[in-house]
Amino acid sequence: MADLDTEQKGAAQTIAFRLWNSRWLLIAGIVAVLAVYALAAISAYVVLAALLLLLAAAMLPTAGARQSTESGPAIEAIGLQRLSGEYLAAAVADPLIIFDRTATIVHANAAAFAAFGGIAPGMSLSLKFRAPEMQALLDGVLSGDVASDVVDYTEKLPVERAYRVSASSVGHATDLYVLVFKDQSETRRIDRMRADFIANASHELRTPLASIAGFIETLRGPARNDPAARDQFLQIMQSQTGRMARLIDDLLSLSRLEMKPYLKPGTEVDLREAVDSVIDSLGPLARENSVAIERDYADGPLDVPGDRDELFQVFENLLENACKYGQSGGRVVVSIARSDAGSEQGIDVTIRDFGPGIPEEHIPRITERFYRVDVETSRTQKGTGLGLSIVKHILTRHNARLSIKSEVGKGAAFSVHLPTH
Ligand code: ADP
Image (cartoon, rainbow, N blue to C red; front, side, top):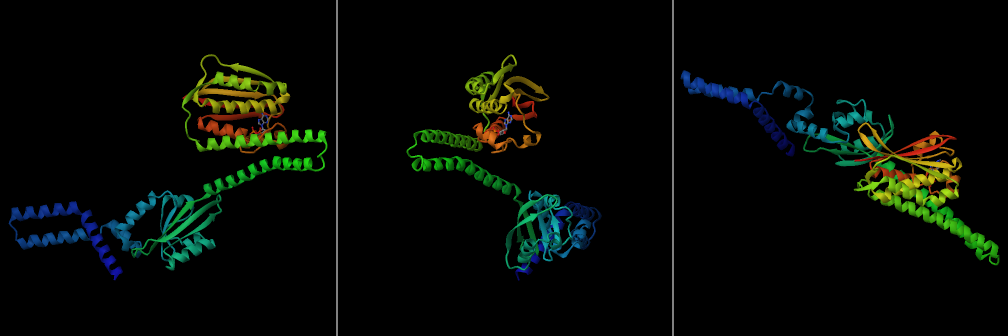
Protein backbone atom coordinates (compact mmCIF):
# COMPACT_ATOMS: atom_id res chain seq x y z
CA MET A 1 0.00 0.00 0.00
CA ALA A 2 2.84 2.32 0.99
CA ASP A 3 4.60 1.32 -2.24
CA LEU A 4 1.50 2.19 -4.29
CA ASP A 5 1.27 5.60 -2.62
CA THR A 6 4.93 6.31 -3.31
CA GLU A 7 4.54 5.20 -6.93
CA GLN A 8 1.53 7.53 -7.40
CA LYS A 9 3.45 10.39 -5.79
CA GLY A 10 6.45 9.62 -8.02
CA ALA A 11 4.27 9.67 -11.18
CA ALA A 12 2.64 12.98 -10.15
CA GLN A 13 6.10 14.46 -9.50
CA THR A 14 7.32 13.30 -12.91
CA ILE A 15 4.30 14.91 -14.69
CA ALA A 16 4.75 18.15 -12.75
CA PHE A 17 8.45 18.12 -13.62
CA ARG A 18 7.73 17.69 -17.37
CA LEU A 19 5.06 20.43 -17.35
CA TRP A 20 7.45 22.78 -15.59
CA ASN A 21 10.20 22.00 -18.11
CA SER A 22 7.86 22.75 -21.07
CA ARG A 23 6.22 25.79 -19.45
CA TRP A 24 7.47 28.37 -21.99
CA LEU A 25 6.49 26.24 -24.95
CA LEU A 26 3.09 25.65 -23.37
CA ILE A 27 2.50 29.37 -22.76
CA ALA A 28 3.55 30.22 -26.32
CA GLY A 29 1.19 27.52 -27.70
CA ILE A 30 -1.77 28.76 -25.63
CA VAL A 31 -1.18 32.35 -26.76
CA ALA A 32 -0.96 31.21 -30.39
CA VAL A 33 -4.20 29.16 -30.20
CA LEU A 34 -6.06 32.03 -28.51
CA ALA A 35 -4.75 34.48 -31.14
CA VAL A 36 -5.97 32.23 -33.98
CA TYR A 37 -9.34 31.88 -32.13
CA ALA A 38 -9.68 35.68 -31.85
CA LEU A 39 -8.55 36.50 -35.39
CA ALA A 40 -9.87 33.59 -37.46
CA ALA A 41 -13.13 33.03 -35.52
CA ILE A 42 -12.67 29.24 -35.40
CA SER A 43 -14.94 27.03 -33.27
CA ALA A 44 -14.41 26.82 -29.47
CA TYR A 45 -14.24 22.99 -29.80
CA VAL A 46 -11.27 23.27 -32.13
CA VAL A 47 -9.58 25.60 -29.60
CA LEU A 48 -10.25 23.14 -26.76
CA ALA A 49 -8.90 20.24 -28.82
CA ALA A 50 -5.77 22.22 -29.71
CA LEU A 51 -5.17 23.12 -26.06
CA LEU A 52 -5.57 19.47 -24.96
CA LEU A 53 -3.10 18.38 -27.65
CA LEU A 54 -0.60 20.97 -26.44
CA LEU A 55 -0.94 19.75 -22.85
CA ALA A 56 -0.42 16.11 -23.89
CA ALA A 57 2.65 17.05 -25.92
CA ALA A 58 4.13 18.91 -22.94
CA MET A 59 3.67 15.82 -20.75
CA LEU A 60 5.59 13.53 -23.14
CA PRO A 61 9.12 12.78 -21.90
CA THR A 62 11.88 14.79 -23.55
CA ALA A 63 14.88 13.10 -25.23
CA GLY A 64 17.06 13.53 -22.10
CA ALA A 65 14.38 12.16 -19.82
CA ARG A 66 13.84 9.16 -22.15
CA GLN A 67 17.53 8.37 -21.95
CA SER A 68 17.49 8.32 -18.16
CA THR A 69 14.38 6.08 -18.22
CA GLU A 70 16.22 3.56 -20.33
CA SER A 71 19.17 3.41 -17.88
CA GLY A 72 17.33 1.28 -15.30
CA PRO A 73 14.08 0.75 -13.44
CA ALA A 74 15.47 1.94 -10.10
CA ILE A 75 16.38 5.29 -11.59
CA GLU A 76 12.91 5.69 -13.20
CA ALA A 77 11.31 5.04 -9.82
CA ILE A 78 13.03 7.95 -8.15
CA GLY A 79 12.76 10.51 -10.94
CA LEU A 80 13.60 13.95 -9.63
CA GLN A 81 15.08 12.63 -6.40
CA ARG A 82 17.89 10.92 -8.35
CA LEU A 83 18.97 14.27 -9.66
CA SER A 84 19.24 15.84 -6.21
CA GLY A 85 20.91 12.62 -4.97
CA GLU A 86 23.76 13.17 -7.43
CA TYR A 87 24.11 16.80 -6.41
CA LEU A 88 24.21 15.77 -2.74
CA ALA A 89 26.78 13.03 -3.46
CA ALA A 90 28.97 15.58 -5.27
CA ALA A 91 28.79 17.92 -2.28
CA VAL A 92 30.08 15.20 0.10
CA ALA A 93 33.86 15.43 0.54
CA ASP A 94 34.23 11.76 1.54
CA PRO A 95 34.08 8.96 -1.05
CA LEU A 96 30.41 8.02 -1.51
CA ILE A 97 28.94 5.21 -3.60
CA ILE A 98 25.23 4.63 -4.34
CA PHE A 99 24.37 1.02 -5.20
CA ASP A 100 21.31 -1.10 -5.88
CA ARG A 101 19.96 -4.30 -4.34
CA THR A 102 22.27 -6.45 -6.51
CA ALA A 103 25.29 -4.56 -5.04
CA THR A 104 25.87 -2.89 -8.42
CA ILE A 105 27.25 0.66 -8.45
CA VAL A 106 24.59 3.15 -9.61
CA HIS A 107 26.56 6.30 -8.88
CA ALA A 108 29.89 7.30 -7.31
CA ASN A 109 30.97 10.83 -6.39
CA ALA A 110 34.25 12.42 -7.50
CA ALA A 111 35.96 11.61 -4.16
CA ALA A 112 35.13 7.90 -4.66
CA PHE A 113 36.57 7.94 -8.19
CA ALA A 114 39.72 9.60 -6.85
CA ALA A 115 40.09 7.19 -3.92
CA PHE A 116 39.27 3.91 -5.69
CA GLY A 117 40.66 3.83 -9.21
CA GLY A 118 38.74 1.79 -11.73
CA ILE A 119 35.21 2.02 -10.38
CA ALA A 120 32.30 2.75 -12.69
CA PRO A 121 28.50 2.60 -12.64
CA GLY A 122 27.37 -0.93 -13.46
CA MET A 123 30.34 -2.51 -11.66
CA SER A 124 29.80 -5.05 -8.89
CA LEU A 125 30.74 -3.75 -5.43
CA SER A 126 31.42 -7.29 -4.18
CA LEU A 127 34.08 -7.69 -6.88
CA LYS A 128 35.64 -4.29 -6.18
CA PHE A 129 35.74 -4.68 -2.39
CA ARG A 130 36.51 -8.34 -1.76
CA ALA A 131 37.55 -8.00 1.90
CA PRO A 132 35.34 -10.19 4.15
CA GLU A 133 34.35 -7.21 6.35
CA MET A 134 33.05 -5.34 3.27
CA GLN A 135 31.11 -8.42 2.08
CA ALA A 136 29.54 -8.76 5.52
CA LEU A 137 28.63 -5.07 5.51
CA LEU A 138 26.96 -5.32 2.08
CA ASP A 139 25.17 -8.59 2.99
CA GLY A 140 23.85 -7.03 6.22
CA VAL A 141 22.15 -4.02 4.60
CA LEU A 142 21.07 -5.82 1.41
CA SER A 143 19.36 -8.63 3.34
CA GLY A 144 17.42 -5.97 5.26
CA ASP A 145 18.65 -7.37 8.61
CA VAL A 146 19.91 -3.90 9.50
CA ALA A 147 19.07 -0.46 8.06
CA SER A 148 22.69 0.66 8.44
CA ASP A 149 26.01 -0.69 9.62
CA VAL A 150 29.65 0.38 10.04
CA VAL A 151 32.94 -1.49 9.57
CA ASP A 152 36.64 -0.66 9.57
CA TYR A 153 38.26 -1.39 6.22
CA THR A 154 41.85 -0.97 5.05
CA GLU A 155 42.69 -0.35 1.41
CA LYS A 156 46.23 -1.64 0.80
CA LEU A 157 47.08 -0.15 -2.60
CA PRO A 158 48.42 2.15 -3.96
CA VAL A 159 49.06 3.40 -0.39
CA GLU A 160 47.65 1.97 2.81
CA ARG A 161 44.55 3.88 3.92
CA ALA A 162 42.26 3.04 6.82
CA TYR A 163 38.56 3.78 6.38
CA ARG A 164 35.49 3.60 8.57
CA VAL A 165 32.80 2.55 6.09
CA SER A 166 29.11 3.01 6.73
CA ALA A 167 26.41 1.39 4.60
CA SER A 168 22.79 2.38 4.81
CA SER A 169 19.57 1.91 2.93
CA VAL A 170 18.16 5.06 1.29
CA GLY A 171 14.61 3.73 1.92
CA HIS A 172 11.47 5.38 0.46
CA ALA A 173 11.06 2.46 -1.96
CA THR A 174 14.11 3.57 -3.91
CA ASP A 175 15.79 0.17 -3.58
CA LEU A 176 19.05 2.07 -3.31
CA TYR A 177 21.83 1.99 -0.72
CA VAL A 178 24.72 4.29 0.16
CA LEU A 179 28.32 3.55 1.15
CA VAL A 180 30.34 6.36 2.76
CA PHE A 181 34.09 6.00 3.41
CA LYS A 182 35.55 8.11 6.24
CA ASP A 183 39.35 8.26 6.01
CA GLN A 184 40.83 7.39 9.40
CA SER A 185 44.50 7.27 8.36
CA GLU A 186 45.42 10.65 9.85
CA THR A 187 43.62 9.92 13.15
CA ARG A 188 45.40 6.55 13.38
CA ARG A 189 48.77 8.20 12.68
CA ILE A 190 48.17 10.77 15.43
CA ASP A 191 47.09 8.00 17.85
CA ARG A 192 50.29 6.08 17.08
CA MET A 193 52.41 9.22 17.54
CA ARG A 194 50.73 9.93 20.88
CA ALA A 195 51.30 6.36 22.08
CA ASP A 196 54.98 6.50 20.97
CA PHE A 197 55.41 9.84 22.71
CA ILE A 198 53.99 8.58 26.01
CA ALA A 199 56.17 5.45 25.79
CA ASN A 200 59.29 7.57 25.10
CA ALA A 201 58.54 10.12 27.84
CA SER A 202 57.86 7.36 30.39
CA HIS A 203 61.08 5.61 29.43
CA GLU A 204 63.08 8.84 29.74
CA LEU A 205 61.66 9.45 33.23
CA ARG A 206 61.97 5.86 34.37
CA THR A 207 65.70 5.59 33.73
CA PRO A 208 66.77 8.32 36.22
CA LEU A 209 64.03 7.24 38.62
CA ALA A 210 65.33 3.65 38.64
CA SER A 211 68.85 4.95 39.25
CA ILE A 212 67.69 7.11 42.21
CA ALA A 213 65.70 4.20 43.68
CA GLY A 214 68.80 1.96 43.39
CA PHE A 215 71.02 4.46 45.20
CA ILE A 216 68.48 4.96 48.00
CA GLU A 217 68.48 1.21 48.56
CA THR A 218 72.31 1.09 48.62
CA LEU A 219 72.46 4.02 51.04
CA ARG A 220 70.04 2.33 53.38
CA GLY A 221 71.90 -0.99 53.12
CA PRO A 222 75.54 -1.70 52.30
CA ALA A 223 76.66 1.98 52.16
CA ARG A 224 74.87 2.96 55.38
CA ASN A 225 78.10 3.66 57.24
CA ASP A 226 80.28 4.77 54.32
CA PRO A 227 80.48 8.60 54.26
CA ALA A 228 82.57 8.72 51.04
CA ALA A 229 80.12 6.51 49.10
CA ARG A 230 77.20 8.48 50.54
CA ASP A 231 78.57 11.76 49.17
CA GLN A 232 79.22 10.27 45.76
CA PHE A 233 75.77 8.65 45.56
CA LEU A 234 73.99 11.82 46.69
CA GLN A 235 75.76 13.72 43.92
CA ILE A 236 74.61 11.20 41.30
CA MET A 237 71.07 11.34 42.71
CA GLN A 238 71.12 15.11 42.44
CA SER A 239 72.18 14.99 38.79
CA GLN A 240 69.45 12.43 38.05
CA THR A 241 66.77 14.61 39.66
CA GLY A 242 68.13 17.49 37.54
CA ARG A 243 67.67 15.34 34.44
CA MET A 244 64.08 14.54 35.42
CA ALA A 245 63.36 18.21 36.11
CA ARG A 246 64.75 19.27 32.69
CA LEU A 247 62.65 16.65 30.98
CA ILE A 248 59.49 17.74 32.80
CA ASP A 249 60.22 21.40 31.97
CA ASP A 250 60.61 20.53 28.27
CA LEU A 251 57.46 18.41 28.28
CA LEU A 252 55.52 21.29 29.85
CA SER A 253 56.94 23.72 27.28
CA LEU A 254 55.83 21.43 24.47
CA SER A 255 52.34 20.96 25.86
CA ARG A 256 51.92 24.71 26.40
CA LEU A 257 52.96 25.33 22.79
CA GLU A 258 50.65 22.61 21.50
CA MET A 259 47.72 24.26 23.22
CA LYS A 260 48.23 27.44 21.19
CA PRO A 261 49.79 26.34 17.90
CA TYR A 262 47.95 28.85 15.70
CA LEU A 263 47.88 31.79 18.07
CA LYS A 264 49.96 34.40 16.26
CA PRO A 265 52.36 36.29 18.54
CA GLY A 266 51.48 39.99 18.35
CA THR A 267 54.46 42.02 19.65
CA GLU A 268 57.62 43.29 17.93
CA VAL A 269 60.89 41.65 18.95
CA ASP A 270 64.28 43.31 18.57
CA LEU A 271 66.37 40.35 17.39
CA ARG A 272 69.68 42.05 18.14
CA GLU A 273 68.69 42.52 21.79
CA ALA A 274 67.14 39.02 22.10
CA VAL A 275 70.15 37.22 20.56
CA ASP A 276 72.59 39.31 22.66
CA SER A 277 70.87 38.30 25.87
CA VAL A 278 70.89 34.61 24.82
CA ILE A 279 74.66 34.89 24.25
CA ASP A 280 75.07 36.53 27.68
CA SER A 281 73.03 33.87 29.44
CA LEU A 282 75.03 31.06 27.79
CA GLY A 283 78.40 32.69 28.51
CA PRO A 284 79.19 30.32 31.39
CA LEU A 285 78.38 27.19 29.27
CA ALA A 286 80.52 28.50 26.37
CA ARG A 287 83.45 29.18 28.73
CA GLU A 288 83.05 25.76 30.37
CA ASN A 289 83.25 24.14 26.89
CA SER A 290 86.04 26.50 25.70
CA VAL A 291 83.88 27.82 22.86
CA ALA A 292 84.27 31.43 21.65
CA ILE A 293 81.04 33.05 20.44
CA GLU A 294 81.41 35.50 17.53
CA ARG A 295 78.71 37.96 16.38
CA ASP A 296 78.02 39.09 12.82
CA TYR A 297 74.96 41.33 12.78
CA ALA A 298 73.57 43.46 9.92
CA ASP A 299 73.25 47.22 10.56
CA GLY A 300 69.97 49.00 11.21
CA PRO A 301 66.80 47.83 12.93
CA LEU A 302 66.35 44.06 13.13
CA ASP A 303 62.77 43.74 14.38
CA VAL A 304 60.25 40.99 13.63
CA PRO A 305 56.72 40.37 14.91
CA GLY A 306 56.90 37.67 17.56
CA ASP A 307 56.93 36.58 21.19
CA ARG A 308 60.22 37.56 22.82
CA ASP A 309 60.29 34.74 25.41
CA GLU A 310 59.58 32.12 22.78
CA LEU A 311 62.20 33.43 20.33
CA PHE A 312 64.66 33.61 23.24
CA GLN A 313 64.00 29.90 23.84
CA VAL A 314 64.61 29.12 20.12
CA PHE A 315 68.02 30.84 20.02
CA GLU A 316 68.94 29.49 23.45
CA ASN A 317 68.27 25.88 22.36
CA LEU A 318 70.21 26.32 19.10
CA LEU A 319 73.18 28.10 20.69
CA GLU A 320 73.29 25.62 23.57
CA ASN A 321 73.40 22.72 21.06
CA ALA A 322 76.17 24.48 19.09
CA CYS A 323 78.26 24.93 22.27
CA LYS A 324 77.61 21.33 23.42
CA TYR A 325 77.73 19.26 20.23
CA GLY A 326 80.04 21.56 18.27
CA GLN A 327 82.42 22.02 21.21
CA SER A 328 85.39 20.51 19.34
CA GLY A 329 85.24 23.35 16.75
CA GLY A 330 86.20 25.84 19.48
CA ARG A 331 84.01 28.65 18.10
CA VAL A 332 80.43 29.44 17.16
CA VAL A 333 79.32 32.27 14.82
CA VAL A 334 75.92 33.89 15.37
CA SER A 335 74.80 36.01 12.44
CA ILE A 336 71.71 38.14 11.82
CA ALA A 337 71.05 39.17 8.24
CA ARG A 338 68.17 40.63 6.25
CA SER A 339 66.91 38.33 3.53
CA ASP A 340 64.62 39.42 0.74
CA ALA A 341 64.48 36.35 -1.41
CA GLY A 342 61.46 36.97 -3.65
CA SER A 343 58.30 38.02 -1.86
CA GLU A 344 59.39 36.43 1.44
CA GLN A 345 60.99 39.40 3.14
CA GLY A 346 62.44 38.58 6.51
CA ILE A 347 65.43 38.21 8.79
CA ASP A 348 67.71 35.16 9.04
CA VAL A 349 69.39 34.26 12.31
CA THR A 350 72.09 31.64 11.74
CA ILE A 351 74.03 29.73 14.40
CA ARG A 352 77.04 28.00 12.92
CA ASP A 353 79.43 25.69 14.70
CA PHE A 354 82.59 23.94 13.51
CA GLY A 355 82.17 20.63 15.32
CA PRO A 356 81.55 17.10 13.98
CA GLY A 357 78.40 18.08 12.05
CA ILE A 358 75.33 15.90 11.48
CA PRO A 359 75.26 13.01 8.99
CA GLU A 360 72.80 13.82 6.18
CA GLU A 361 70.43 10.92 6.86
CA HIS A 362 69.64 12.26 10.35
CA ILE A 363 68.79 15.82 9.29
CA PRO A 364 65.16 15.21 8.16
CA ARG A 365 64.30 13.56 11.51
CA ILE A 366 66.33 15.68 13.89
CA THR A 367 63.38 17.90 14.95
CA GLU A 368 61.24 14.88 15.95
CA ARG A 369 60.61 14.46 19.65
CA PHE A 370 63.25 12.34 21.39
CA TYR A 371 65.25 11.90 18.17
CA ARG A 372 68.99 12.03 18.79
CA VAL A 373 71.92 11.31 16.53
CA ASP A 374 73.72 9.72 19.44
CA VAL A 375 71.77 9.00 22.64
CA GLU A 376 74.82 8.70 24.90
CA THR A 377 76.34 12.04 23.79
CA SER A 378 72.96 13.72 24.30
CA ARG A 379 72.68 12.25 27.82
CA THR A 380 76.19 13.28 28.85
CA GLN A 381 75.42 16.76 27.47
CA LYS A 382 72.28 16.91 29.64
CA GLY A 383 70.04 16.74 26.57
CA THR A 384 66.39 15.69 26.70
CA GLY A 385 65.89 15.07 22.97
CA LEU A 386 63.11 17.68 22.95
CA GLY A 387 65.05 20.90 22.29
CA LEU A 388 64.69 20.99 18.50
CA SER A 389 61.04 19.91 18.53
CA ILE A 390 60.32 22.86 20.85
CA VAL A 391 62.19 25.07 18.35
CA LYS A 392 60.06 23.71 15.49
CA HIS A 393 56.80 24.33 17.38
CA ILE A 394 57.70 27.92 18.22
CA LEU A 395 58.78 28.64 14.65
CA THR A 396 55.52 27.24 13.25
CA ARG A 397 53.62 29.69 15.45
CA HIS A 398 55.78 32.48 14.03
CA ASN A 399 55.25 31.40 10.44
CA ALA A 400 59.02 30.97 10.37
CA ARG A 401 61.29 28.27 8.89
CA LEU A 402 64.25 26.32 10.18
CA SER A 403 66.87 25.12 7.72
CA ILE A 404 69.74 22.86 8.72
CA LYS A 405 72.94 22.53 6.69
CA SER A 406 75.82 20.36 7.72
CA GLU A 407 78.95 18.76 6.41
CA VAL A 408 80.31 15.90 8.48
CA GLY A 409 83.61 16.88 10.09
CA LYS A 410 83.11 20.57 9.29
CA GLY A 411 80.19 21.60 11.49
CA ALA A 412 76.51 22.46 11.34
CA ALA A 413 74.51 25.63 10.60
CA PHE A 414 70.98 26.11 11.95
CA SER A 415 69.24 28.98 10.19
CA VAL A 416 65.97 30.54 11.33
CA HIS A 417 64.06 32.58 8.74
CA LEU A 418 61.61 34.96 10.41
CA PRO A 419 59.17 36.90 8.21
CA THR A 420 59.09 40.66 8.87
CA HIS A 421 55.32 40.83 8.28
P1 ADP B 1 69.02 17.24 22.90
O1 ADP B 1 68.28 17.59 24.11
O2 ADP B 1 69.43 15.81 22.82
O3 ADP B 1 70.13 18.19 22.62
P2 ADP B 1 67.78 18.36 20.56
O4 ADP B 1 66.38 18.16 20.05
O5 ADP B 1 68.18 19.74 20.92
O6 ADP B 1 67.92 17.36 21.75
O7 ADP B 1 68.76 17.82 19.47
C1 ADP B 1 68.56 16.55 18.91
C2 ADP B 1 69.85 15.92 18.49
O8 ADP B 1 70.39 16.63 17.38
C3 ADP B 1 70.94 15.96 19.53
O9 ADP B 1 70.81 14.88 20.42
C4 ADP B 1 72.19 15.86 18.69
O10 ADP B 1 72.43 14.50 18.41
C5 ADP B 1 71.80 16.55 17.39
N1 ADP B 1 72.32 17.93 17.28
C6 ADP B 1 71.66 19.07 17.57
N2 ADP B 1 72.41 20.16 17.34
C7 ADP B 1 73.60 19.70 16.88
C8 ADP B 1 74.82 20.33 16.44
N3 ADP B 1 74.97 21.66 16.45
N4 ADP B 1 75.82 19.52 16.03
C9 ADP B 1 75.68 18.20 16.00
N5 ADP B 1 74.57 17.54 16.38
C10 ADP B 1 73.54 18.28 16.84
